[in-house]
Each structure stands twice: as structure tokens, then as C-alpha cells.
Image 1 (cartoon, one colour):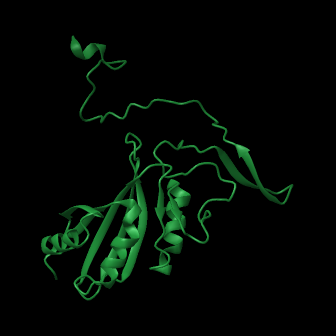
Image 2 (cartoon, one colour):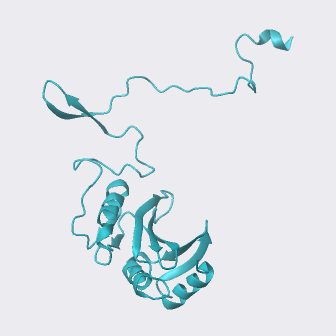
Image 3 (tube, helix red, strand yellow):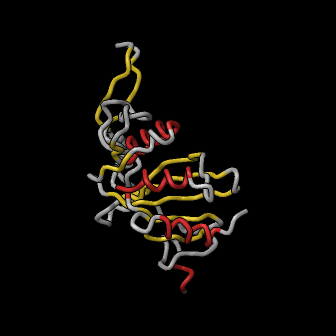
Length: 199
């Protein structure tokens, strides 16, 4: 296994304009990169003999709705020759167009489509940027933290019409608040029937 700190410094020195930070967490090297230069960074990681990260593992995103650049787009790669994984992280807003890696790694096709479908991250240069997990008419991106838990529509199969129908979400009961106190710990306030305990 390679020295991750040394590898991080090597990559930062080779790509100073593209890589802003290198850190190690959970036994993996994480590079913070400029989203516009992701193709340059990944090409270096794939082709440089000190790296040889030839296997893309995943492309996903993390949503931080309180930030101006609300998404962290995250790529994971494996270098079998170094027996090392690397994580690339780039910030992106809802309108940031992140370059696609499909020309370098055709296998990221569905990963990028999934990130688009579930988070709304747009990858430029992708030949087939359409939804992959939700319906084509689906409204919104379900893994965003501001997406409503109940969704916007519900889908069911109608036996009479012999087709799938979409209907607005109906909540069949009102919102209820539950008291999840442990019966062994007791409440900080008197419960009904406990008036005699205080006497």
C-alpha cells in the first residue's frame, strides 16, 4: 500500500491549479478539486505511472442546501496496482455544469445519470443525460434535502384502466405528534394519573 500523504502531495504539486486540498480520512485520500478541471485531474490520475487509478467505483453527490454551492459531487476511483482508493470532491451549484468523464471512462455513464436523476447535477458532454431511476415525467430530484418526504404524486396500477395512473399525494390522516419517552426513564412533566405520586 502506498503512502497516502505523499501521494496527495505529488498530485497537488502536479496539478496546483486544479487540486486545492488533499486530506486523509478513513484510510482514503480525498482531493478537493475544481469542478471545471475534473477531466484534467482524472486523466492525470489514470495515466500517471505514480497513480494508475484505472477503475471508477462511483459518482454521486452530497446535498448541503445551506451553501451557495449546495452540492459536493464525489468520484471514487481504485488503483489496483497501488491497492489504493481515492475520493475526488468538487463543489457545484444547481446551475454548475460539471464536465462528464464518459470519454475517459465509459463506465461512468449510469453513475452520472443517477447523480443527475437523484440530485440534479448536470454533466456536460454526456451523450444521454436523462433520468435512470425515476419516471421521465418525475418532478424534482428525490435525494435533495428539500424534496418533500411524501413526494408530489403517487403512482398506482388501476385495474379498471389497465394502466399505471399518477395522482396527487393524499395524506389519509392528519399529522400526529408522538411522545417517544422511555417508560423506564420517566417524563419531566406529570402524566395523567400520576397526580398521586407527588403526594
